[in-house]
Image 1: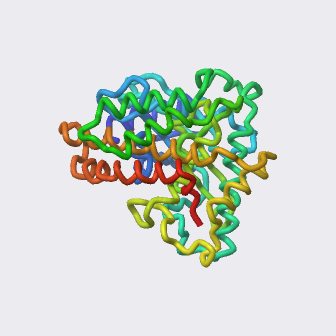
Image 2 (image 1 turned 90 degrees about the vertical axis):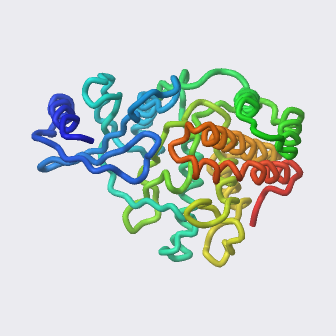
Length: 343
């Protein structure tokens, strides 16, 4: 954030955030690259600013107004979120819309193996992940004013149609497993069952803050993809993430001896989640998991196409990510065949 922007945001904060006086300094967080995120500080205080990125954007992308709305609506619920302070739709302040929220004291983690934690702490942290995900899906949409936060209708069918169209539009070569997965989902996608809940859209360890030195979640971050949808799509995306390779790129648990680390297997995590929601077993869960792999494959195909077209910010990384499309398609087929839940 340049000097002029800091001057403008300092004046805006003084007018809109009680106690924010004087010129602020800004430090950019390494996380939140889609919607750039900054720590603003001044004498005696600090907050966090999250903004749209500069430049030409897709119409529905980077909707910081929706992020602000949903987190403000969740204040006082069982879903821990930062306190929203103010929203700015005046692009003249820093060049794009933004919002500010209270800074939450917490620890963030990227590696689900949690190498610096004890087995007991790991188990407790994952148990709280299941509890909070269930709490998101139990939010009263009417009481929070979020009943119109997403469209009516069959969420899975709508998403399947959307991402199939997107995949076909960005297809660069035939991937037989992807074609087979799309055909299977067309014939076997779970039917609408009446569940229509708030969904986070990107619920994973690195979008959570835990109490410093503790095991409880104190904030769920990055609500950019949140909407009203089917809760099992959120749950399946968590399981899908863990089936990725471990390490900085995959951030998964594939091949990891979870029991030795105190981490739950997929089925244990699902059971804990269901217990919090008062649900029995999910008979079609593998179909939701197959859908999660399909959607990620379609997203990665779009990344690959942009890299090939020269429109990606990092073409080399885009091509590397795009190379995983066949792998995700194969994993989706394995899930479709009932071989998707890991140990």
